[in-house]
Amino acid sequence: MDKSKKYITILAILLMISILIIIYLLVVNAPMIEDTGEEIERKWLINASDIPYNLEDGVEQKIVQTYLNFSPEIRVRNINNGEKYILTIKSNMSVDGLTRDEKEYYISEEEYNSLLKKQEGNTIVKTRYQIYDKGNIMEIDIFENQLKGLAYMEVEFETEEKARAFETPKWVIKDVTDDIRYKNGYLARYGIPENN
Image (cartoon, rainbow, N blue to C red; front, side, top):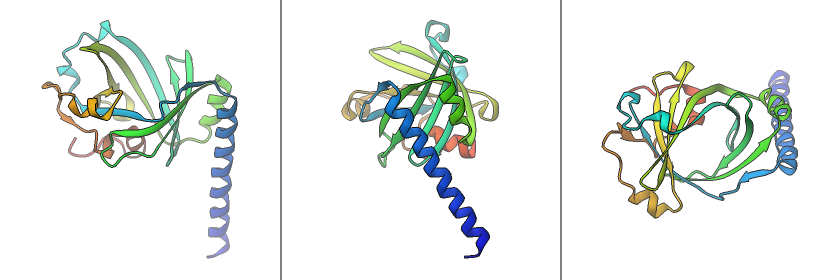
C-alpha cells in the first residue's frame, strides 16, 4: 500500500472515530425519546393520487433527514423547520426488513448543525402525514427534490404477528418491506430505484 492510500485510510478511520465520539457524547447527555428495542414496521409503495384519506385530517410534519452513517444507520432529522431535532440510531435489520433495533434522542439545534458536517449521501426531504385508521397509525410520506414522485405508506406494529396479519390495502402499489431499495438509507445514497 502506498503512502497516499495509507493516509486516506487513516483519515477515514479518524473521521469515523470522531463521528462515534460525538454521537456517544450526544447520546449520554440527550434525553431519550424512545427505546423500542425493536421497531416493527411494514412499508408499501403508493401512488399519491390514489391515497383514500383526506391528508388535511392528519398530523402533518415536514422532515429534513440527513444520514451520518449507513451501517449502523445513524441519522438526524429537522422536524417542521426547527420545531425539534432528533438523532436516530438503527441497526440489526432482519432479513425480511420487518424489524430493526432503534433508539431516538432529542438533540439541540447546535448539536444538529454540528452533526450535519458529518453527512453521508443526499439529504431526504419529505412531508409525512399521520392518519389514524382502524386502530393503526398510517404514516404517508410524500418525497421532494431528487426523490420527487416517490411516495409510500408505513405502519408500525407492537408485534411481528400483528404486522404479518395486517392485510395489505387494495389501493397500494406493492409491499416493499423486504426491498432494501425503499429503505431511506438506500434512497439517500442511490435515489429512486429503477423499475419503480
